[in-house]
Image: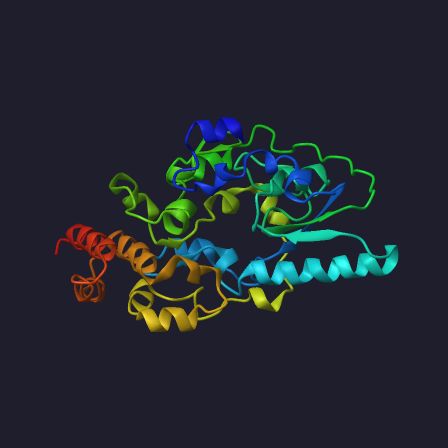
Length: 312
């Protein structure tokens, strides 16, 4: 982690360096912690046409994890219920639940808990479930025996490295977030680097290419969690349709969605880039032209780039 931060791979995610050793030492984050219980929750929709959407430049690609309800809420509720069930068996104990919401090395903890191994794309992989799942933790003061770790089964495969559109996986087990499409479309608050825009294709929120290429995901299980079912036609919508949402529509439609936190301006920024990467249809040109004088400079900049790409 320290070496990764020293290389500046975190980009503008300053919070990655803010908590020092707390990430690697659970007892510093939650005093009294003696064990960490890790869990996973599948999120892959029953029917997901990821490859078909990526191949259709007029449609919008949203990372599979973000099609439904915000996973933070769902996973926290599940972990809370699990902790309560444990307390019913063991008696009262001290604990805190986390899911991508604190300085926690989730993949490392899960790997040490026999839930899988860290793949070359840095995500956790399980031989029986692939990698389409969320991770969560219960930090507790119970005295629990450690689980055996899972061996790494990536072998010589580097499908995830080869398919990355922006070459963000700079080496096995090492990702430069500054080039990662998930970072560029979600975490980056400002302008998307010009040299990377054309590589985003029609991906408007996150990217799943490394998981789609992973051979272990042929064993992935579809989720049974109804909250993760696609909402607002995010799995079938066109770029033009989503670009037409007003800020009020964006806030209302995406209430309870992880997408809402990026805000309407970044949403439009991302879709403008995707439109610029697509075909120069009359509908795309009209949609972009309608936003040419948007009040936000970030939106105007990316709309101008897209119109130039379409020859307008």
